[in-house]
Image 1 (cartoon, rainbow, N blue to C red):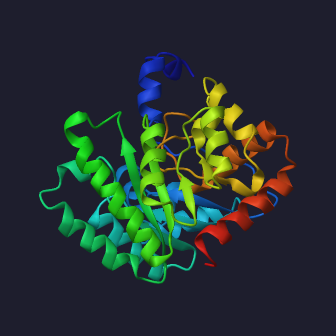
Image 2: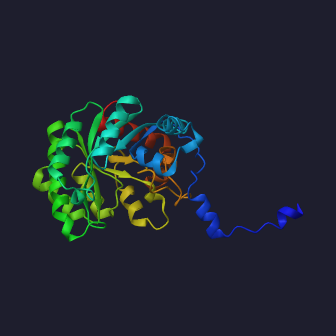
Image 3: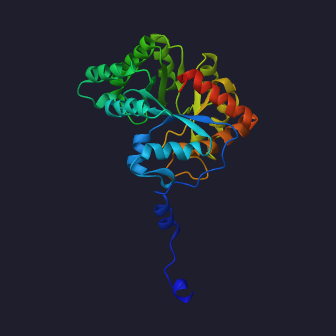
Length: 299
C-alpha cells in the first residue's frame, strides 16, 4: 500500500491523453434494433482500432458484433474518396450487416488532379447492388476556401446526377453552406431521397429541409451541452424524417466526447433524441429502423 501511495499521481491532462485512444464502455442496449446510417469503418479501424477488444484479424466483423449486442444491427459504410468507396462496396458485398454509399467528399474534390476521372470511378461503383447511396457529397465552407468552391460545386452537381441516374439516396455533407446546398439542389432537381448527414442547422433550416421532404440524420453532436439549436431542430423533425448516425470514429456522444466513436455507441444518441423529441424510446427505435429500410433498402 505504501509503495502504491508513493507513485506519482497522474494529472488530469495526462489521464485525458491516455484515455483519448480508448473506446468507451458499451451503453445499455436499445429495446429495438436500429441502424447506424453513417459510419466510416475503414477510418475507425485504422485510426482507433477494434471496438470491444474483438479479433484484430477481422476488425469489421468485430465492430459489427459489438454493435449488434446493443441493438445496432445494420451499418451504412460511407465513402469519401475513390479508395474508401471501393473498399465500402467490397465490404458491403462481404458482410450482410453492411451497406455502402460512394462519393468524393467535398473537401476531396478540389485536391484531385482529375476530378472527372474520379467521378467516373464513383459512377461505376454506384451501379453495384449493395451500394445504396451517393455520398458523402455536398459543400464545406469551413475547411475549403474560395479557391476550392468551384470544384466542390461541380463535384456536388455531378453526384446529384449520379444519384438520380441510379435511383440512390443522396447523402449530403453540409458544413457552413446551408443556402448553397439548397440552391444547388434546386438548380439540379433533388433526387427522390435526400439525407442531410450529421445535420448541423438550426430550427429554421430544419423546417425548410422537412418541408422539402429531406431526411435529417443526427449524430452525437445533438448530445453536446452547447447544442441547444441542434436539439431545437431535432424536436421539430417528424420521426419519419429522422435518422441517427455516428460518423465514427468522430463526434462521440456525451459523456464520452473526445474518445473514439463506433456504431455500438448509437444508443446514447437515440436516447438523447427520444428525450429531445418527447418520443417513446421503443417507438423511436421502430421509426428509425423503418426509415433506414425505406432510405437504403433491405439489407
